[in-house]
Image (cartoon, rainbow, N blue to C red; front, side, top):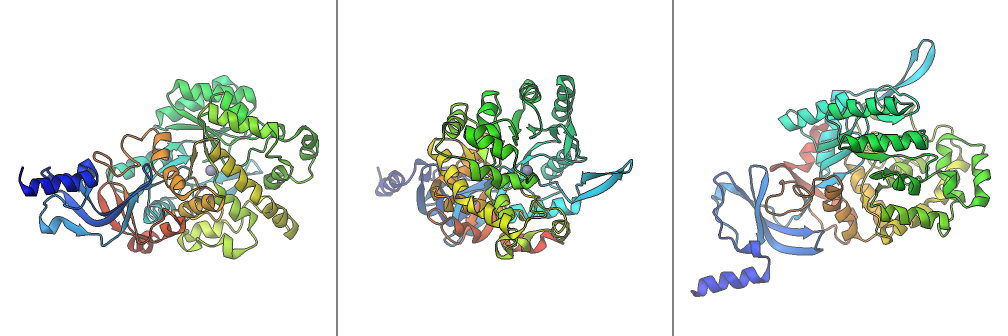
Length: 476
Ligand SMILES: [Zn+2]
């Protein structure tokens, strides 16, 4: 063996096998050098690394000696930290403004989908490193059109796995479809499956019979069932086979200690006040909560807590918190949120009560994580004051403030979400064969998640975009 070959082998042994750059790069391949690779799965940091990309996929990656490509195809990333593209599991990318219309004289809420707002949201998500989303509810038609426009390249945006209209006891044009019996549930589910949806979202007014029928119909059609629950407890939803639960609001009276249930049911405040009314009475050390958490773990139910949308509500009177990401919101949405918001009618005392339960919600997040419940990072983008992309990182940061480790949060936002979405074999890692979805940061988020805001560039399906340019062009 020549000295040179021995040298190469030694270098390979020191890093990863793929560092043995003996492959012949495809003609069109681009080599990105000078990166520090961060692998959330192994919690490993590899300096002086390179990534070889061709046809939207990662061909290979390694450290030290890189494959030979033409100088024009070599891009020096100058020390950027590289991570797999982020996944926001709760982004209503196609949801636009809400308005009130009169139907036969009675006012009804209508959700719209507007191409200009969708394009803005999609581009802004990418600008903050979000390369894949789960869209848990919206117009099936708009969501199918979005998927097609992204696939064809007509629109720059994250690849989306989506639910159509959410199933509930009331209809809400553009957002919810009313279901009653098993036949109407089957019809709604079949229509969404035909429209190419991936999930069925079961909403909070459904009773247990309807809920069960919804889960069964979704599974019959090969779709996952996700839910925002009301009276049905999270443990019951898990037992009934639901795949994922959204929002840190397990607000069923049955999850409270027995002595607190009547008071909660009789509470004078309604609507969004239940957010804190429930948490004020919850006992995280009670058997009810132990049972809830154990059921999620046992049935492998994924949870996205959407902490940021509750933060925006609980601090709705504090613009320094509420408007932190306002610069990235489409102006028409910002205008819409002057009317449609969760804290309508809240007084100073309500905000105070809501903020007082926040440490309890943070502890709940820690308890889920420590019990091995699968958590993903979801924001509820499109709901009041939630900014596309910016708040995906804010959501990760809120998980760190709740006491979860940074590396664990980075896994939740990448490979673990990919597995939950059934896409774990092609996204969520920087590895040979995976889609070339990569975020390049100016600072290392593996100790401090806030560093993920320092986005330099984002690669989506092999195309590299400057982050600032994406932000600047989103609203045009
Ligand atoms: Zn939502």
